[in-house]
Length: 302
Ligand SMILES: Nc1ncnc2c1ncn2[C@@H]1O[C@H](COP(=O)(O)OP(=O)(O)OP(=O)(O)O)[C@@H](O)[C@H]1O
Ligand SMILES: [Mg+2]
Image (cartoon, rainbow, N blue to C red; front, side):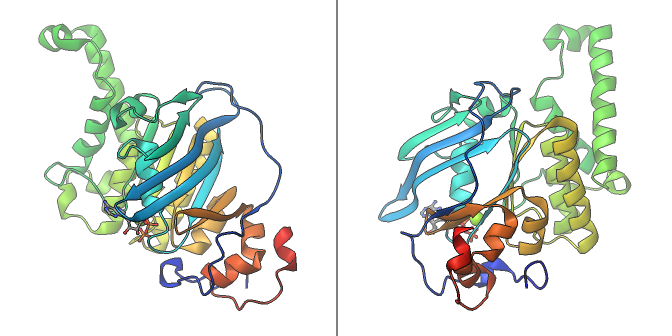
């Protein structure tokens, strides 16, 4: 079955959950260089635990993402995928554990501080400024990272500020174009169908090139053309700027095609991780998430 006819992962609950069984394929990669531009681990999670009252949403997660790597996070509803993104992006402080971004401990730093380190995120429930045009949504994302020149430059319209404004417009235009949004640039973002609104959110996330991009179900609601464009964007971000991507997605075909490595989460714990074809071959993962019958587990050890 591998690449064809992969089901919507959301609809499948594990028939049999064996959280003791954690399979890790492949060798460990290079060590962290301690900054966001060097080689090695860009993101490192150590023993991340999140509890909500009596619910353990994440249970001692260890994870590393290297520079330029695209890592897929899959798992059924309630597995803890969005909670993991909340912890990485700073929306939620974990009950225990450490978040390292480029070797810096950011566990207690707010989202804005992490954004300054190059972290961007899109949301499972799309978040755009509905009352602004598509173009202004994208330009506003650049304002957050600095228009340049400060208050005095605002008043006197210094050459520096005019140059920065031209540069800002240029980057906005280029991003609208690459995200297929040029034709709807003047439309209110709140009036758009979900697929286009998701592209607006993506455009906001990439207009200032990120170092680490978290995408929470970005293909949800996209038609096949939009999904293809999204896939192209992910690939070109990596090629152009060695951006790392963490991708949560229920569309198994999309995940398998886009990702270098896949992590399977179940009930807040990592059930397996490895290359896409290793994960597709893993009998227990197939049984749990990909809808295949449980048969031989001998190929799971890779
Ligand atoms: N704010 C919250 N308060 C209480 N429980 C929460 C909260 N957020 C998440 N949870 C619980 O934590 C667990 C993990 O939820 P999470 O949203 O991270 O799952 P998910 O893998 O993203 O699921 P989905 O595929 O449905 O988006 C679930 O049991 C959920 O009910
Ligand atoms: Mg979620």
